Figure (spheres, rainbow, N blue to C red):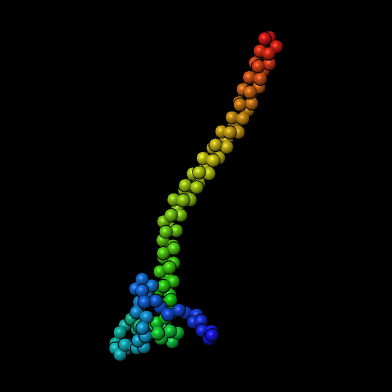
Length: 133
């Protein structure tokens, strides 16, 4: 039986949910022919765009890098949004429960001497009743 060599980056699935972009070949980057006519800030932005697209094209001409990054971003958002929406109320709830627990502890600590004194008085009354009766 032949062992298949495992591809470190899997092929994108056919489901549209998992493939946020077209995973076919990325077109080769090009420089705008009217680049010299643009103002300096636009030329700078255009050269940065060309550099970024060239790097992406060199690293992954089939679009797998883009697919992988967007898929991981989608997974991150699926995890992060519920965490950021649920975490603050849960922290507030647990903080409130801790305060309630602290209050109950203080009530118990203050009630112990009263309960002990009550039991002691009942014990004395019981003993007096046995002696007189």
